[in-house]
Length: 573
Image 1 (cartoon, helix red, strand yellow):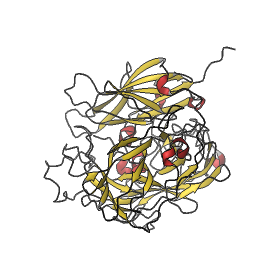
Image 2: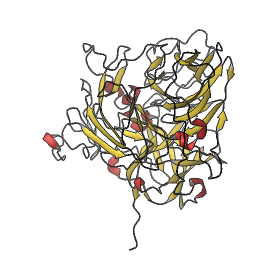
Image 3: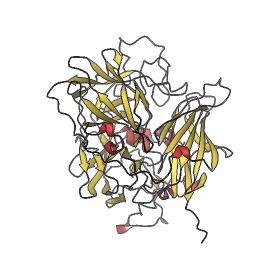
Image 4: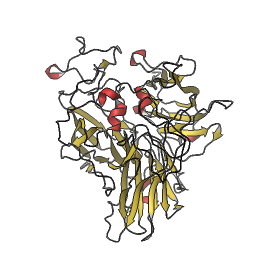
């Protein structure tokens, strides 16, 4: 199901004698605290951030972002136009069993490349090294429309090694960046999955959502980061209270295959703001709020591989929630209308996706739960069963999170027409597919592909150059097919897109996305499932070379990634 290149090796980290718990995590059943927040001042957010790797006391491998003030995975809060100055240090430690690193230039395994351009003090230049290793590090600012340049949001070659001098990320949040929820995480090819599974992720907020959605003005805003991790109790049988299901299948990576029942052993444990909710008991975390309080919940699915299907249950009844933004982009509205607010009783969030919605809390004494319902990931997918995430406790003295500004001068009108009103200049087709390394062995490793129609399926290799060449200023439609029997999630860096249709059925969404599910093929359909996306290359910051991939990070690490080159407009003068 998943080809984990170096997960086994990455699990061998600091020796057990290294007992320091650098990044402590709450106990199961703990109260969910807001992530520590670092805010910009006078138009600048300046911070130190380092990444650590060590064995946690729960027997999982932890990867940890720690700010200079000791805050773990802080939420970064900036306004459009603000400057981010982030000094990033790789403090990870190598371990016996780590594979030798590879470089992006040749794709061959090397321990040292004498031809590599050297930076200060004899270190390889992090902007050009392209090293992929168990202790390599970089940062991707997921969803931001900043250029794919070194020191900004470039991930193909930028790679910082332990012992390198502190590396500066420095860029401005674009003035036209939609206000909403974004995030940061590592993007070292071949090692993204273990690092994110270990907890290397954090939220980033572009302020001003109340200016786009007046209903959110003055509301307490709660940030909930949902992460997954390897099972703490992988050998435990399911809780006896669960309905009896067929024996759970285990693939060669030690994960649970989808059994199609909604129950049984999950592929991964989940946590909410680092409070673990481990299998099989699923002791829920605790969210405290005032009775009937109205809040804005900003939910990030920072999972490496787990799909979410969130619902609020009061008593036994699902409650309506009002969705105001998806993937950092508030609902679109015409100049003479208020933004639409979609009221639903559950909302799916793919790995890497974000949803912001308004919640009316339960009355006093009414039992309430935040749950994730089962997700059908397909015959070849993993098991994402029903499970509780948090119990909502009400109390008159419950401390509310900080509120958004009550005054909300409207955002300036967009300079460009709404993407849905622009006709594409061309249509491309891409498709997801998979191949067992040994077709005679269903349990063998799998190689994953995302292929431009007409090209030969091939696992990602940066030495191959761009798979697609587009032009700044253009709008294109991409049809993404899924020719595999498991659910995949499409993501592209540097820009957002509009979902136009789902399996051939027109969709009229008021949201832009940067991450979307592509339904799986069940083997009996007359045509492959697909989505049609309107891709927006109008922003000058989209010029450059960057990637698109499946955001199930084990798939990305195993080859399901491609490269696009966006060329600038050529002047006729």
